[in-house]
Length: 154
Image 1 (cartoon, rainbow, N blue to C red):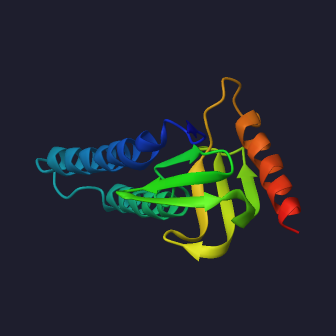
Image 2 (image 1 turned 180 degrees about the horizontal axis):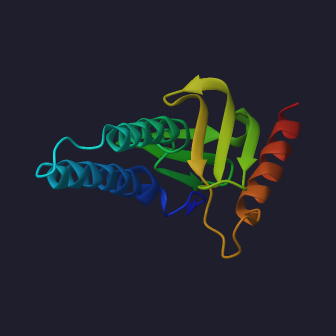
Image 3 (image 1 turned 180 degrees about the vertical axis):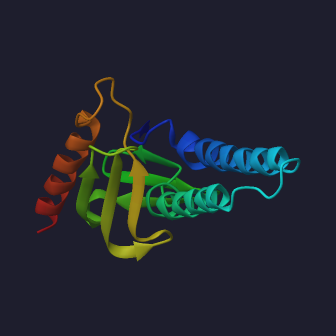
């Protein structure tokens, strides 16, 4: 089985959020500590940092935290792993493959005929490309294979 998801998924889901929220917390602590001698901290700056934290949660919830950890190509099916769970999805059970290649991270969403362990939509990060903002041939091939599998079922 060959992986068709990005090797950077762990970074997207774990490392980047830790860096983002850690940086915001460091900035807030630094502002509060440095203004302790002068008086009250500038509330506008602290409110802005809180806003950035909320926006980070919203964006990461919509675009990052729902990604599958790993997707493997098993020929006539995909093996999806998230956390400690795994599910095998036949290509013929995929209704649609949505591929947003011009965003970071490039995102693939599979719409399934019947809901499985992970629901009726499964998203994963597409493999990284050397040329940024270009389509992945692995995902384009997957789209063609899913279409062929659906045609064979009819």
